[in-house]
Image (cartoon, rainbow, N blue to C red; front, top):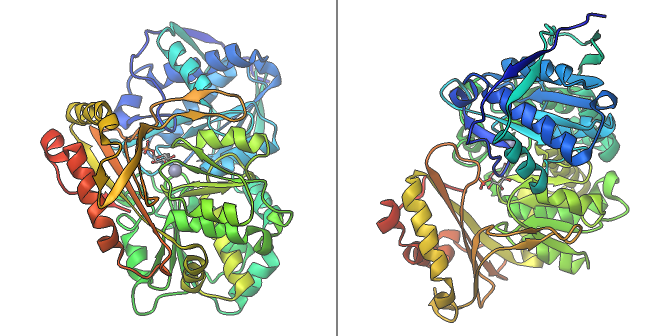
Length: 549
Ligand code: G1P
Ligand code: ZN
């Protein structure tokens, strides 16, 4: 056993370390500043100590990331800080790799105190791109707001941090003892695969592939590659080549690892091409998002969530006793609400961000949940889970013997369709965007009773959420206009961007028309009205979105 020398390094606070929708996200070069990452991690430890009053020497900390540029250096620094802060055990994903859902699974299965995920999710990677760090708590989920706020308060007063010089080989599985800490480099695939095996009928999915079923999974050069190769091609017998772009790269092959119609264009083109396979899917930088495609067909995340909830009990052994409830974030389409109503389940509406689902799941109020931003998941972990959603869809296809298109169209027939789009205006001027939102909020009351796209505005408010489990209140979670015919227009500024501001406008209109109408025609009047109400052009000088999903 080596006895390391603990160094106490004097530092001064940074004023910009307030965690956003999903941890602290900044330009990589911001994180590369001297003391920046160390200050934040020491503040996490300080806040956790204060909030939970734990003895670190009896606790385990898990560390891993999506493999992006700076991942390995950040891991070295975190391990050094964790050993110097006296953790009993530090677990590191081999080569520093751990997808976000796998992190959640590892924390839960190893009863760790928590974990630090290095990722900026779907944001590009590289020295000139983005980096991020997020703390997950004992239930495996993102730290809730009272913890992230405590972390922030500590970042504003941190005056020193503790480090050692551990020098660990993170590329090979092994355990070593440094001072009082056991440092273990472990297989990042093992726990996650075991959880998937517990939930899904791997035999039925093997049969599906053996019957000639064809799919393509695009890992977008990001962290899901190793998981997808192992589970789809290794365990389920999908032909080699099913997984493409399956080796994580520090810059994601210079791509934007966000699995949507814009950034997963190659996959979309392939599924809409002549020799399209039966099924297509993709995942993001850190493996928690998913894109679901059929032959010539895109399943919106809101529909995907509703359909998974509709079939889970019948098609997936892990849910055979039924769902305790479902949940969606406020801007997500209301498709899942109708499934919940049909099956007499509770449906919860939470603010944007996965951290709000954790309490509901811990209290067994919700089994399956999701967001419009290509995130779906269940209580098997406390994060959204890209590959899990893919296995859900494979299970539904295997169980029904139907195609993706048939499944969705039947759903629309039965439940009606939420015609739904999200329009993003990325990189707009922050000052203008803030003024615009302030103007909108000032005028909300006057919008009630007016008519938008031929429908009356019944309610106009800034969404506020009272957690049904602990009673905590989260205010200012997005402006909603709720119309008489059930349509909704929602406005939010992104809490994950790293450059300027990103405005998101979410538009939904419900029709019981079999779902075959032209979505652009149906939504256009609402979109036009939304832009006019915002005075978007006047405040931000833009008129057309950068991304529509
Ligand atoms: C975005 C999504 C949100 C998701 C988050 C983290 O946050 O909209 O649903 O939980 O990324 O993946 P936003 O940038 O809108 O704050
Ligand atoms: Zn992600």
